Image 1 (tube, rainbow, N blue to C red):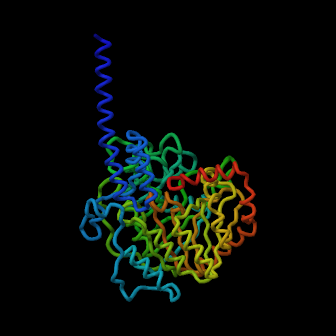
Image 2: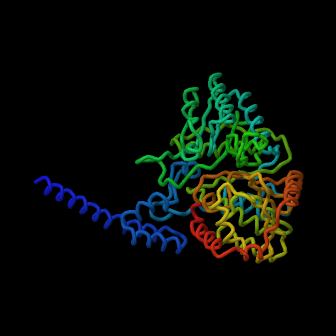
Image 3: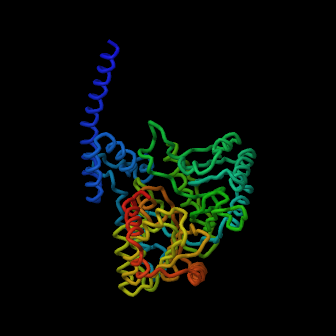
Length: 486
């Protein structure tokens, strides 16, 4: 009788599994067909669901649904996007552009395009400082936290528990103890890079900490694949830090005990643009908590010569804003485009835009790390570099240490900096924040630094790529297949 009951229980379980497959697989296939904008991606997910009717829909739910709807949309017009219509659409670009926009004469078209995408004005009177590596960035950030009197807002992807992480933890807890309102957002996946988790110690020190999209059965945000990659520090609404630098010893390149140093460039901002960066943090906080932060009234006084504007990007109503700004900037270029990035897996549209720019006579240079911290990404990039070299785009490998910097420079005046890499994860899946800067003096400084690094870099040639063994080519091509999620 016991054996018979076991067989009956197994039969019921199999019937449930079959019923779930008959329901889940068609629903996932329908969803992919309706919402995926690339027919190849749609066919891929449909094939996965057909071949694996149980695992396929689960994979699609966690990794294929790349669009979030949330209440932050009410900040703009009080309206929510319509269900079943606007699922993978970003916010509609503006058509009415104010005629009094500040604009460098040679970049008026780009200024207009970015305003149409973001709805944010280009703000003058900002002071921007370049901070190289943790040796310069961390003391400036810690000093700002230690002098805070009202509020400190910090968003980061990785917050390590080593010496640098402990210094930030102590400064944040001390600020909270003296009555400063301290809010910290740490990505739940990025936090796993170090142990013990700093969020526990911060909470014990009176700091309000939120883990962004932690893995739960019921979560505020769909999909484990959508991560918060924004790096922001806002102090008293007057001073801000942004760029690509996480918090940890990895960015201390002169530290003898650092076995895997990561060079990087961070930026300090003062002036009116700080309010736009604070808005970027507020959007991230709303995503993580559901709470709307009150934006401070008034603006910061002008204190510098840089024109700046913030670009907030993510798989929500901000979808595709950064990628479209990049395409507009490439189209605007007349003399040069210089790109420094650790990960370069561009969309077909961006690849074609760079090829077209090179055909127009624009000097296009791409600087990548010679030794990448993610070897599979390095291999995937090698599989597509020939498409750049074939169009006389210069590609160079920068020698160690691994360079995590993200710089996009056009014509010696336009800079785009921030947390985003030029790959599908940053431009389609992650929450990112960037700042465009019009400043000839700063652009000249960074282009000179770019050229100096280029002089010590090795040039990648088409012949070199063609000489790869069949085994290496196959490995690179296999990794490239997974480039949308690397």
